[in-house]
Image (cartoon, rainbow, N blue to C red):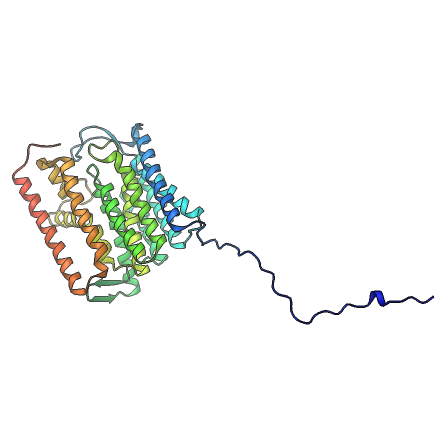
Length: 378
């Protein structure tokens, strides 16, 4: 018997290649999972709401080791909780958590967060008890080194019409000094109801606008979330304050101000002097006072009441009047900082000179208020 194999003959295949199979694209971990506008609204709402609610909850609870007791150098007369930094950072963490879950992950944000954790940790420890100044400065220096290693460097002197690059070693030293000074000056300036929170609202708000205008949404949202968290805290810190930031809140805000300003410079959003202008109400007062005390031979590490805002309160202006007038200066500095990068070089020089004149006038006004004190201490 013979078997026929015709039914099993090898089939003839087309030599042309088959079309590729289309697959759904795999989402990139760095790609946002929702529209930027919706994400922004959710993140900012989380920052504002969580900060306000957490701060309210903390203000109603008194922990013996987290209460600011009045003394001869303070401006308040009754014990006030100093746990407000926990509420502000809770709002900030909630908003940044939204960004992370939505896929907004960048190494710059991780490095900034690591530096902030170091500063927040030693500051909370100091709020609970006494931490030596050597340990605080060591931790502040470590946080500054983290930022520098991540590329957050003050690499050149950039003023209108001037660009002088620094040698690498000098850039690291200046970055270290700048970050440590910003951490501490923000802590020094946190001595009046509504003051540090207001500076955060206006200063970080200005950085957020600069970020959006420069096409850097993550930078802009990070700064905006800090501002929104500060706004939630201000609900309970505006005069008469029911809660204070504490070292945890003020020192961390100082670190974030330094870090975001250097981050913005790295992204090419603005020169460093623009960020200084945004935070100039704090930078000028703290630096002026430090130099003045050094020249008088006073120990600069000892608490005092010689900042401009403290002298105005003691002269009779009171917390509310002083902070409201300060908000006008902060708002003006923020608006000018937002406008400055787009101005011609000549106008930028005029702007810097004008603000130098404004601060000289403020200094003169403080001295006048001290010569003619007001009986109103509200």
